[in-house]
Structures are given as C-alpha cells and as structure tokens.
Length: 374
Image (cartoon, rainbow, N blue to C red; front, side, top):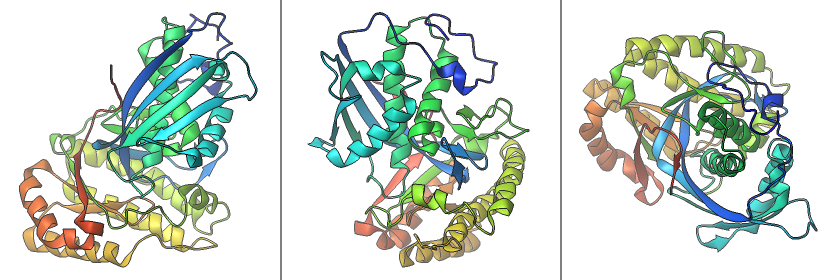
C-alpha cells in the first residue's frame, strides 16, 4: 500500500499486508509525541498463542482508566546507521537498559510495517501509575503506548491516514509487542480474536465490543489488590508457550469460544449473577492451566486465596454482586457495580487491605482507551 493510498477501513477487515508501507521519500527531522494508554483486565482470558503473536482463542477485556502508562517518544533523524535500530529507554526517570532486548525484538517484528524506525534515533521515556511486571498487564499499557507513538509519527509522515486505519494498525503493532496490548488501544470493552458472533473480530488486532451493553456494566468498578508487587516468577510468554502440547488445551480453547458467546448475552441482558459465575470460572481456569502445565507453576499466593474466600463470604452475607478475577499473577481484581462502590470499598479497607503488600490497592474503573497528550 503506497503513501496517501490509505483505504477507508471502517467497515473492512484488514490483513497484515494492508499494514505494510513503503519507505517514505521525505522524513521529519525531529519531534516528540506523548500518549497515555491504559492497562486492561480480561474477562474471558486468552492463554496460548502461535507465531506471530496470534491468539489460540478469542478474549474480551475491560479497559481500565487509572492503571496506565504515559510514554513520550522523542525522535531525531539519524546521520549514520551503525546499527539497524537506535534507541534509549528511560523508565520512571532512570535509564533502563534491561528493557532494551524486548524493545529490540518489538522493532524487529514491526519494521516491515513502520520502516521509518530505522531512520530515527528514539528516546523513549515512560512511567507507570502502578507497579511494573506485577500482573497488572504493564506490558499491555507499555507496548500499546509505544504503538500509539509510532502511529502518530506515521500519521505525521502521511496526513491522509483515516482514523479507523490508525487505530487498527496501532492495535496490530501493539499485539506484536505484547498480545494483550492490542486490547489497550480502545475501550471500554474490547474483543481480540476471531469469533463468528463478534462483527469485525480479528486475530490481528482488537476491536471495540459494539453490541448492546446493559447500563450496569458501563460503569463497572475494578479495585486491584496488590498481593505481590514484585516481578512474576514465571513470565506470561513462558506460560503461553506451555500451552503447546498441554493435555487440556483443545478443550480450554473451545471453552473460551463458548464463553465469548455467553458473555455477549450476559452483557446485553445485564445478568450480573451469570457474569460473576463466568468471570470467576475464567480466572480459576487460567490458573488451573498453569498448574497442569509441564513444567507446572503456581502464581497465586496464600493471600490470594485468603482474599478469594473472604470475597465469597462477603458476597453470601451481603447478597453482593462483587466478584474477583485474576491475571497471570498473584494480584486480585475485584469487579463490582458502581451502586456498591461505597460498601465494597469499606469492605476492602477493613478486611482485605491487610492481605495486600504494604496494604496497597488501586481503585479503578472502566476507561475509554488511549489518550494523546499534547
């Protein structure tokens, strides 16, 4: 696809080849761009992927608001090319060379789609509103922020790009950095992975969930209980790879497909009780797959289980609609309607904070996706 030949992609499913562009004849000398992009929490989980960063099953997530990454990408045209890519990384005010291998791999994966990255030296400065690598999908917000910055540069090089294409390609690029990152570009509910009942769904990028959503789910709350703020013992990348040859993989992938169909109905009807049952089942199934891998591993901590039991007890005693979900880590996401906000938060402070590291938790809610900061 040539420059200035961006097709109107609002109603078109795009292929990977649609995102390839030829090198630009004219380049900008320098500039900066800044984006704030959110984390997300999957309701139906994806666990298992194939090259290049394609999901074995579809997933759907709530886009968050308060858990986010802010990334500024400064770029300057290179005089010489001693290396294929040239970049520096500053994380929360300090040089972070340990992040370089991941960004290097990301650039290698996306260079055919954004060839101009070879022409610039980048200074990438990021900061999180939450602990990095602790199971709050920091790679999702971090990689989606990079993708948004790169797409802003491409749009500056090619102003004729339409908005739909911009966001689809941003999600496509983000996915090549971290699978779940493709769900952090838009909001407030995003589907990633082909599913016959979700119009426009694709393995290549996330799409906003566009069918009916009952009012109760449009203002849902999420409090993240930070049971363990350290880095996970096993990376999600390793965990995904262990699904190859997993004895329960085939059934799990089909279960996720079925759960997308079910949650579509749940979201439309506002059936909170069915939502609770499906979301908690998905969380426990995710960890069951980890515990039955070879090698097997456990990312939950004793305090994770203490919290889950207390949530069940509270829900029964108060006829509450609170439920939990888990990512690939020890931390617990508590999901609940806005109408229960005050009561649930009092419960958290009195009975659950003690199980969090340094009594630390983060109140969050549904967000609308990535925001450019001028």
